Image (cartoon, rainbow, N blue to C red; front, top):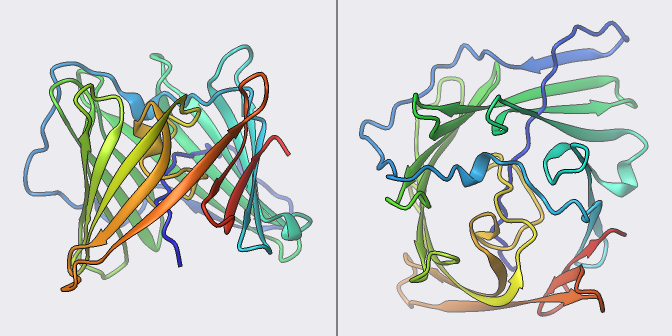
Length: 293
């Protein structure tokens, strides 16, 4: 079964108490402490803060994913007036739309960078809701250093290292429950000479080590810069949130495989006559994304 690296960024703020008959579980101010890496990550000479701009091409109103013929997922987007800044994203499974949806609200700081993304998952059939808050943390110079998601039962931490030119070099991630020791995995990014596209990702976990190599077309990637946390699924191919162009081929290698096998996955991006992206898919049409349908 094909692997699609999917990475994104979504958070919503829930500031008032509700008395609507629902059981509410708010995910904020966790009693679980954040783990320290134990070493310092490189900081840049130039601050780009690409991952906290919250920008998506506002011509994209929705994305419908059809995978393996019968699994459907959908994202719908709203924007700050006359900008490409996301204000809200709604995610749901279309066949379950009558009962449940997950709404992500984006809140920005005085520098127009993401401060929080608040996720409210509400199920009107079973009468419960779960609220998660993803917090973007900056140093005194305004550099994004980490993104935390807290819960009474688990915590997620994402820490960022940089190249001198401000590009993301590595992301360390830990996702654990109460009583579980921290165990950080890392994604390491290698770019082309112009630093416009990620050409290699090493994904290293406690017992895993994968390498992914990427090829690109010459079209503008509409999903660049949109990221929330490594655990949040978004309709992206490969390291799309870091690259200027669209991934058209992924070569995957399991570095722990003694046979050194590699697997190649092609992708196709399709445009209308006015050059708007309307569909992208894998080579066998097992996974197809429809734009604005």
